[in-house]
Length: 119
Image 1 (cartoon, one colour):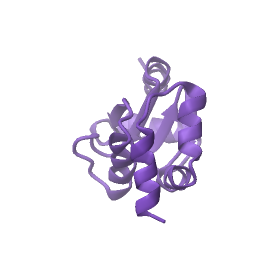
Image 2: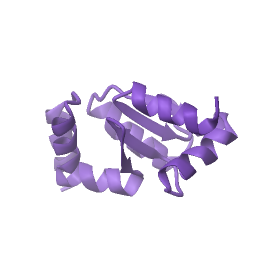
Image 3: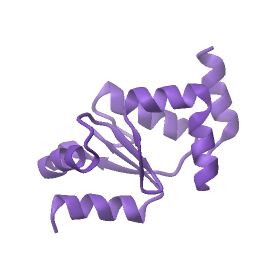
Image 4: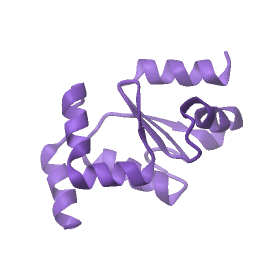
């Protein structure tokens, strides 16, 4: 199976996927840590794909999304963005709206706490 096929299958089989450096419990870069931390804190059930474990996946996800950086967040098959976009969406409430519109469970109180702490 090609890297593109593996990526497509992972995105199709999981409601929320984070392609990241490291894992959700042990991120290996600050940007990946920030996005995984937001998702973990908000109680979102997500699949993590460690791009450091497979060079083909690491390059393949950049080609797949036509986005040059890691991490990359997908929700219900839709590319959301990287660290800056996810951070902005979290602080503006757009991430909540996306999760609600896609039927993804998350802790609304936790999302509010993130915004309050960054106000």
